[in-house]
Image (cartoon, rainbow, N blue to C red):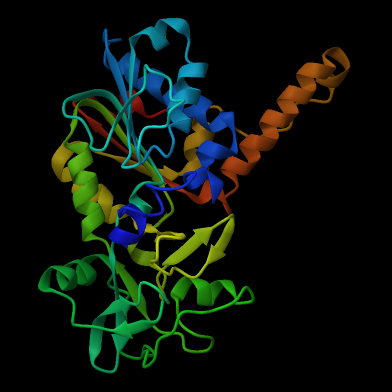
Length: 354
């Protein structure tokens, strides 16, 4: 997964970038950026409006979010912003000069660290239940063919036991043979769990690598807020077959790790939050994107019809914004993302809109 995503010809470091293959909240609408700008303004106030306000975007794609934040920010705020894009790809030639570009997270952040759909691309191993017990999943990097490998390490097993306790109950089915699905007619379940039709089985994505990545990111914040937004699940409702899948050209595809597609899996957000909490030593907030965006002003409500008579152009603008907000807050879609907010050196209530 590491090589397929971040190797020399990896999905995230070559080509046109992720926006050409799938739609995220950042790409969906400026409404999302407007809400993040309100979050940034809240952090700025909690920090006492410092002369330099950092905003660091981890997994920045081609810098789309930071470009839009700079465009929407009021002049006074924009003058104090220090935007940093963290990405392993090379710097886009048209990126505004005021946006710094680097492959690693800087130290001593005072402001806002953003990670929108970053953690789901932090590489993980997958454990599968076999007649011999848990085994790590091995995948042919060219064909996607799957075979059971060695047992998980003690570290893997400890994480699974604590954070994925529903995995492989005594009566769980076992996987005896593996094979990546082929062709466009495979159903969504087979694309997600990677098994051939009718095979089923119990899987779990071993998430301690993401815990370490997030704890490391939170540790880079001196004062401010670390915010992760991602597809996720919680301890009491882990998906029995895991969530490993692929995306290419706007379509869900088998997760063949050959560099041609995004290979991704949802995030155990409560495990990640616990790891961040040990670093930040502050309470955190974990809510759905629907709840977070509504608190930040994106309610998705239809504008009153009376506005159409008074200001037809204004009505159309408000209608478009409401439509975008509705997409971003749809609990069956982007609104189902989880928002993890971990403050460092400031009170949680000071940086979380309610």
